[in-house]
Image (cartoon, rainbow, N blue to C red; front, top):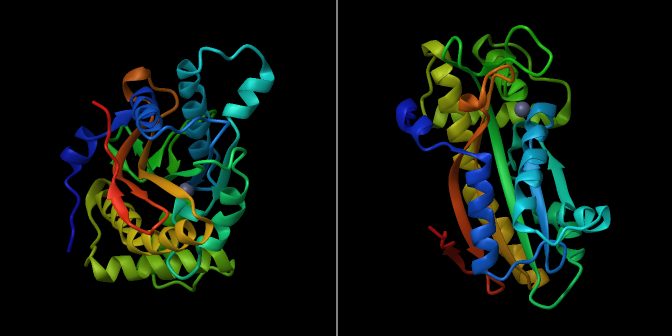
Amino acid sequence: MEQVSVDSFIKNAIDIPQLCKIINGIMERYKIYLGVNVVVVVINCLDEQCTTVIDNIKYGMRMYYPEISNNDTLIKIEMFYNMRLFGGLFLPHIKTYESLMPAAHHVPVKEDDKLMILNLSHIGYDANTKEFGAFIRYGHNSSTAACGAITSCYDQILKGMKMPSDSDLRALSRYIKKTISTHNIEPKPLGYDLLDVTVNAYKDQIPWMKKQLRKLAQKDEIDIIYIGGIEIDTNKESDSDTNDKIVLMDTFIVNQNGNIIAAILNE
Ligand SMILES: [Zn+2]
């Protein structure tokens, strides 16, 4: 059983500029050049508020490219592949390396080419109520469920309701059910159970993700840099102190031989 410590979870959260600094540090260390020898794949939820964070990451990365002089350059460096999956989860036995092949094949410069994967699941945090699993979206007056997909699957499982009819959502629901039983997750106040579900659902996909990335790296002879974690969506009406945060959980490299090594982060 893995219970998430809420305090340390929040303490470990970084903001978007800090995340961009880490991404840029990895790029410098491993000679990765946006728009040249890399394709960045962003795996995140279908939730439009989660996608907003990706736009913020693109925006945050611009400061490392002072040579941007026109829109063409901007378009090149911001050419990210976006893979939207319910919950931002790369579900074991559902998603495979094959879904990443198009990105791996489209790196502009083939010499020393890389794939960088940014994999974010997400959870809302309403700073007013200190509750996880919900937040106030842009243009709304009150909070709504986040991740909506994970939350609805979780609620339906708790209530013993039928599986969703959508096949992707059904796959997520089965996976969440397994996460709940593997980690003995029980209802808790303030959405702490949803935090347990989200963090463990993210973690449980990692062994499968690694296996698939090893296959892809060897097949396509490409180095893959993986950066994964949980995005905390906070109220959009709040000030900058409570802007969206990222809890990084995994940073590793899968080289062309299929070996997995820890990525070194610049301090
Ligand atoms: Zn979501």
